[in-house]
Image 1 (tube, rainbow, N blue to C red):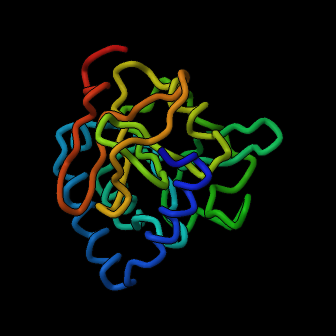
Image 2: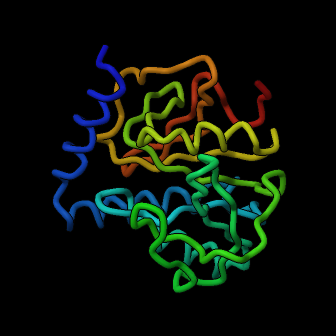
Image 3: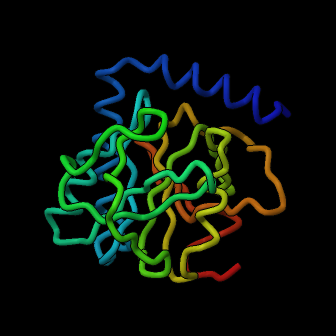
Length: 197
């Protein structure tokens, strides 16, 4: 098995190689699939993230959630604590360039309690069908995922090119409930929704 560093490099190169028009169409299909999830439709408070570079685009999903009257939070990085604050937004325009050039809510706003999140959408570089994800190496989401309520649903967005046979994992890693690609909805084999772990 490849190391995390090797797999991360390989998958980023592969994802970056997806044609921009193809990436946009795949992102549209992924957004439609997420919007059809009962857990998404029923969620009142959703954590999303602002996509960057070659990630699955998340602006359309963010705008859909806001248009349905859902409370939408975006993460703000606190590098000195290696932590994420969940800050409510009213519009994509509320986001400004912050840590590492990521789009984030501006500082000074009160964060949401992790327990109020009904559905959390998380990024990643590679995923396996057991629900495990390989992130960017900072460990931010590895620390965040265990903080959600047990009733919260976790969803990862990925292109089919990002699905691998197995992701290197540690004991503390938390699998997500769903991985949504342009072709399918992958239900975690190890952490299905509604089942406490």
